[in-house]
Image (cartoon, rainbow, N blue to C red; front, side):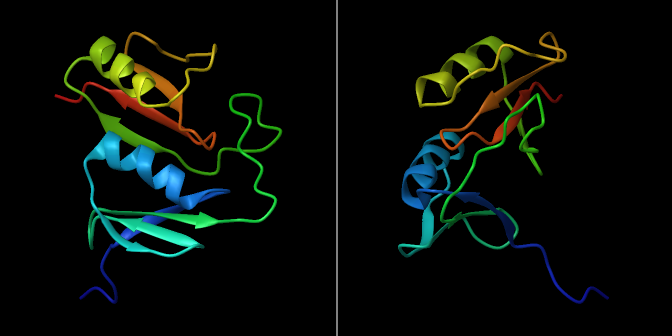
Length: 120
């Protein structure tokens, strides 16, 4: 028997509301809690939170001076169309792409790397 159940995970950032707006548009999750220091999207089992950190420094992927620490794996129906849509809502694409024919590494507005791929 489990002691706890998965609710979600949180990303550090300098502006929780702005990063929540990006992920709301990207994932279609609704805001379930908000304060000046923390915003949580979704609910138990699919939650994603954003925590305000003073002096936040974004990851410097891929060079690793500031490690990425964690990243999201997201599935899209079409890699090219998915990438274009995600870039259209504020993500950026680093030059280095380990396997661009299989997945794309993108950066959210706070600099967190995440991957999109076609999972079928």
